[in-house]
Amino acid sequence: MKKKIKIGISGALGRMGISLIKEISSKRKNKKITLGALIVKKNCLESGKNINNVIKISNVKNIKISNSIKKVINDFDVLIDFTNTKNTLYNIKQCAMFKKKIVIGTTGFTKKEINTIKKYREKIGIVISSNFSIGINLMLQLLKKTATKIGKNSDIEIIEYHHNKKIDAPSGTALTIGNIISKTMNWDNKNNIYSRKGKIGKRKKKSIGFSSVRAGNIIGDHTVIFDNSHERIEITHKAHSRCCFAKGAIHSAIWLKEKNKIGLFKINDVLC
Image 1 (cartoon, helix red, strand yellow):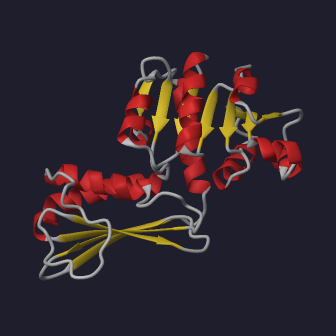
Image 2 (cartoon, helix red, strand yellow):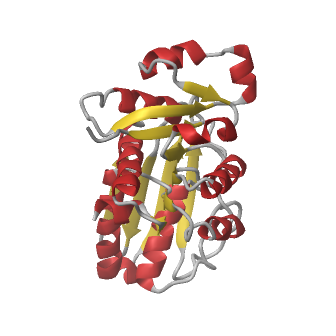
């Protein structure tokens, strides 16, 4: 019998962590995957906060739970990480040392930090994406086509909505959308607008406007507007639950392990 792929989750008590645990646990009929280890914050581990609930959801006996990736590094094949930039950079370093593959959904990396991640692509398999939703990635394809057809004569705006605990803005997905459009149009990003206040003057050409909303428990909505003198096109994606992100991340983890991939990949590589 073929061994199941053991998946580790960093940030297991977070919003995405819980969604990943539920999704993996719901796939019991899928013989490919199982939960291998859960990594949580030290204070949560010491206090036992929500730990019992997570164990119950996971439905795995004697699952390894730790605040240190080093203590559970041999208990998973692929790590899924939706945490923060500092933690993710530490985790990828450990994964590289022990030849473990990693799926990264953390956003907010600087260019320098992205370059650090790229250094590990010769050692391990990495899938990194600002958004693991299949719908978002279909949306990106539509945006390429739309930008090609009417981008030159349109004012382009990107509006993103997220919950009030999200720490980076614009969202990683919004920035990815902007980069896709800019690349399609052969624009650089120097004229992009990230905030407006007061007398801002006439809009510059070859620019993309970004607006961020942080309110309530919004999971993630993204709208792109192409507006010209005659008409307006709006392309919108709304996430109804984090399940869509969890499914994409888990699919990526399976793909990395089954294909025995080494290198740096995006969700589009997985979906091809």
